[in-house]
Image (tube, rainbow over all chains, first blue to last red; front, side, top):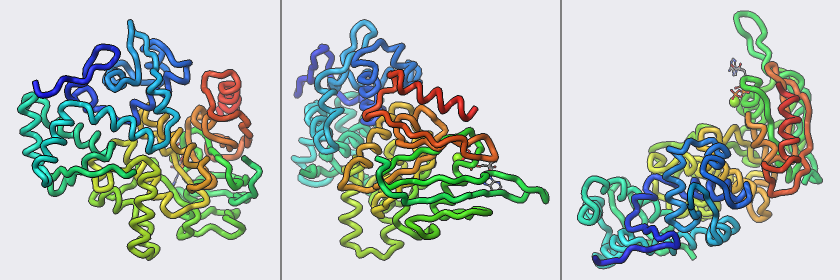
Length: 174
Length: 253
Ligand SMILES: Nc1ncnc2c1ncn2[C@@H]1O[C@H](COP(=O)(O)OP(=O)(O)OP(=O)(O)O)[C@@H](O)[C@H]1O
Ligand SMILES: [Mg+2]
C-alpha cells in the first residue's frame, strides 16, 4: 500500500474521498453550527428535527463531518470537537487553511497531486479517472473525480477547466 | 445599529393590477424607512406582495401610488448603490463564476483591470476562491447563491436587497449562508452597509434583522414594524428569541 490512510480519533479513516463526495463545506459547517447552537452536543434525532432534514439526507453529512474530525459520534450522540469550534470562529482564509491541511492528507488526493506534479503539465480528466479507478475500481471513479475537483477547488490546490477537461495544480492565495 | 440615517424611504406606496376590468390590490399604503447600517427583514404570508415591494424598491417595478426615495431621490434601476440577490440565483449558465460576477461591472464600463481585481476580491469574500472558472452547473445551490451575492456586492452597494435568498437551499446550507451574510454586513471594510431582505420565515427574520416589517395577507399592509434588540450571535433556543417569533407570528396570521 503506497499510503497509509489518515486515521482520526474515532479510529475511522478517510482513505478515499467517497464519504465526502456528495457533501459540501457549507453543509458540514451548517451541521456544526446547528450542534453548537444546542450546546455543542445532541442526539441525531434532535439535530435532524432541528435542521428539518431526515436521517437519510443528514447521514452522509454527519459521516463527512466525523471523518474530517469536526464531529464525534458515539451511540447516536453528536458532539462538536475543538477543531470545529476553531473552524466556526475562523475567517474565510483560516477556515480554508484548516480544511486544506485535512484534505491534503487524504491518500487518493495526495496521489493525484503527486501525479500532476510529476507530469509537470495539466492532467486530463481521463488520466485522473484512470488513476482513481486503479485504486478504487471504476464503479465510484466518476463520483470521486467530482469530489476531488470540488475539494481541490475549495482548498485552492487544484483548478479544473470543465471545457478542456484539464486539471492543474495551483498555489493557494496567501 | 438603527442609529444610521434613513437611506431608503417608502412613502405611502400602493400597487394594484387591473384584472378583468377590476382592480386587483397587492400592496396598500406601505410606509417605512430603512436606516443606514440596519438589517431589515420584510415578512408576510405567501402572495402578500413582498416580492412586488422589493421589485419596486430596486426600480424594477413602479408603485401605482406613493413614492420610494433612495438617498432622497426617486429610485432608479441603474443606480449601483442598490443591488439585488434573487431567490432563483439568476446566473448565466454559459458564463463562469468570474464572468457572472463581472457582468454588472461590464455593463457599467468598468476597465478590465479593475473588473478583474474587484471580481477576485468578492469571489474571495463569499468563500468562492478556487471556483473562479467553474460553471454554474458544477456548483451546489449554496455556491450558486454565493455567486449571486458576489455579483451584487461587486457593485459596492450601500443597500443590498435580497428576495428569499436562502429558500431554495437545504436547511444546513441556508444556516451557513445566513451567518456569512451577517459577517459581510458587520465587516466595515466590505459592502453592504444596509440589508433589506424578504423572507417568509419569521425565524429567519428574527435571527437576522434589527427591524422586522410585518405585512398582512394580500393586499399587503404593514401590521407592525418591530425592533429586534437581541444581541448577536442570536440563539434560537433562547426564550427571548422564540418570544419574538411567537409575537410576530401572532401578528401576521
Ligand atoms: N405582473 C403582475 N400582474 C398581475 N398580478 C401580479 C403581478 N405580479 C404579482 N402579481 C400578484 O400579486 C400578488 C403578490 O405577489 P408577490 O409575488 O409580490 O407576493 P409574495 O409575497 O412575494 O409571495 P410569495 O411569498 O409566494 O413569494 C400575487 O397574487 C401575484 O399573483
Ligand atoms: Mg415572493
